[in-house]
Amino acid sequence: MTLLKTLPHAGLLVALLLLAACAPSQNWREVRPEGSGAELMFPCKPDQAHRPASAQEPAMGLAVCRAGGLSFSLSWSEMPRPDMLGPALLAMGEGLRQRLKAPEAVWQAVQVPGMTPRPESGQQALAGPGQQARQALFSRGLKVYQLVMLGPRDDEPAWQNFVASVRLPE
Image 1 (cartoon, one colour):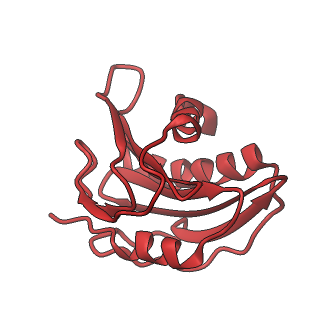
Image 2: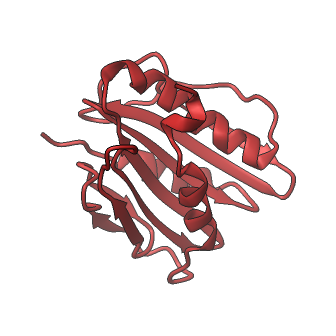
């Protein structure tokens, strides 16, 4: 199975990320996106979309909002088999990098309470023409997660707050 078939609707999730909007100022609030198994703080009220699993595709979801000129999102997908976790995480990270036309960037460790340690987990900052992004990739059980902050500029304090707020309770 190719990596693109692993996450067949990643483009849809990114399109929702780019189009979503909400209050222009940062007003952090706790959110538990339906079906994600996660709780985290968003700087605005996120729009949420969830697609249950089918015979051909895994369950997927997205929570996204726009605040202060930046988009903040959590996307997730439940893999049918453990051997698909690593390739799915790699595909999520590489997909964003390619869409931004960003050069390779250094991966750093990411620690999310409740995550399953995997070598493919990490976080990075990306810079493409007119867009900057930060992303974190991690998993728990059979779910893979991608946390993204995207916009025309970087906001490290907002990113640190966003990442530090993520919890994957049992």
